[in-house]
Image (tube, rainbow, N blue to C red):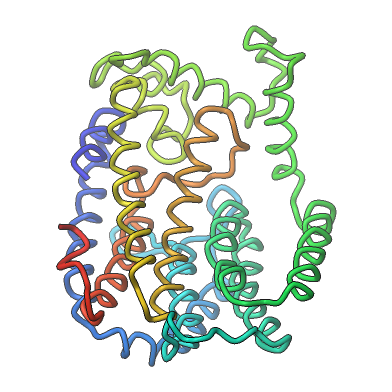
Length: 358
């Protein structure tokens, strides 16, 4: 948190107070919600899930577009909240409630076709509503995080073959009939940017906006070298060559000022968090809790991997933020809510660690 606030103060000081408020509210939310027994969260999970879908649908009907996306609810004092940030924890909570009475040591039954179809319907409804906003990046993170409920349950090899075949067919349908032209452009510009025929000396005036963003991010990361330019000395971020320097490209902004050694600090902190969550998944015996924790772990891995990948021009630009580091109150509050539920589950486990932050 301190690293995030120091970096934000350097590259976008006018946003510092709002982000600090989000962190404070996040800690308050964490310590309050983690005291609520997970049994109550599971009991009300269907209502929370359907309330989320109603809000997402209402945004599509009555929401006001910002940069062509209707993802935010307007709040007093000029604040906004993005409900789609809660899609992973609320859907994972709803699905995990179906396994709350199963122990990991017991024989896990193979899912029936009806159970698979029902779970897919629950997973894909918010994904479709989010993509219609359109917010393809958030939808991708959501799907990758929630599909663990299928892959880490027993499907049977016949169902697995059918599922993978439908997945491939679905990807083709999404490419030709779902993705907007600008979303396809991001993918194709990524391929062009990294093609052997193209070098960084190519005429950038012919680039698409996505390729331009990738170029500026690579320049910022390279400029940091080993030690970084120094706090407040990053030219790409301070001269605003780097777009969305406080959100999508916060990693490039950070590396430009803190250097390669600073990036190792960030990666080390992420590795510690992910390793701890993986340990919790491994030792948890209740299947419902295990699947919820696994979905949150997968969400964080996906966000970190894709965001850093696109900052290094290794992956397409999808608008996915970096957890706990990128500016955004909705993301911060949603992350603390995810961890609050994990903590609530730990407090009811037979052999839990004392705290998620210890």
